[in-house]
Amino acid sequence: MTLQTLIIEPGLAERHYWRDLWRYRELFFVLAWRDVAVRYKQTIIGLAWALLQPFLTMVVFTVVFGKLAKMPTEGDAPYALLVFAGLLPWQFFSSSLSSASNSLIGNANLISKVYFPRLIVPTAAVVVSFIDFLISFSILVLVMVWYQFMPGWQILTLPFFVLMAFLAALGPGLWITALNVKYRDFRYVIPFIVSMGLYVSPVGFSSSVIPEQWRLLYSLNPVVGVIDGFRWAILGGEAQIYWPGFILSWCLIGFFLWLGIRQFRKMEKSFADFV
Image 1 (cartoon, rainbow, N blue to C red):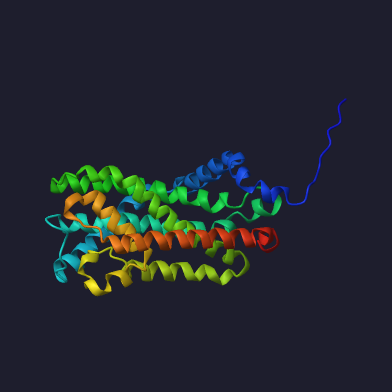
Image 2 (cartoon, helix red, strand yellow):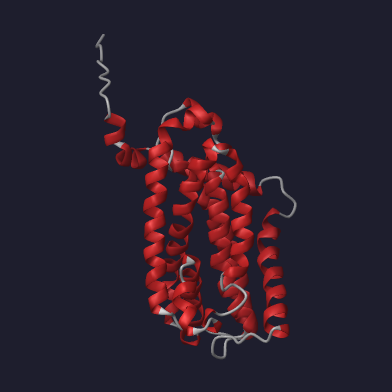
């Protein structure tokens, strides 16, 4: 019988943390698949709601901003298509932010008993939002067919802007979920941010309506760059990207991603004590 020696070295897990993210990739897929299954299993309108919610929101925004407020569209693109091209990234961002922010609390039993890089949990939670995004994208295709609108080559860049939306949500999501473990009242912050953000972001209107002297300041909301990028990819030449604001959005996304990971890693060791 061969005896194996287990060596416990201080700081070993810390040094191998990013390697462990890859080693525990199967856990990532298990958690992601579980969240998707829970979301849609044994529900009457689970899948239908993922279709109805963006469609009904598009109708309301088109009537309020397009018909009543007479907001301009981008070029000759139908206003409903303008709205839906902005609604897709916003819902992906807001849903990802909400899912990631509450993910650690929802996996309290797992976190308190088993070691694994906790960063896996909020990242896996975003997968459900991505599934919703793919379902909602089918409505966009139908809207394009209805208006006989053919996208240009820019549609090939859409995955780049999906990644941009993912990173924009992940950074603040990591920071807030870490705070939410220790201070449970942070769970009330996210619904407020999402509710306010829907109206201060250019979802129901084009960001081009913002006066030129205020556009860079308006771009301090990083979702503005994400939405403008989506519209450029979907509407092609009908939409224009405000490049100073777009670059500023990327800088802010990078900053919040760095801050989110830094604060998450700083508080990670105490998660098991608070959940």
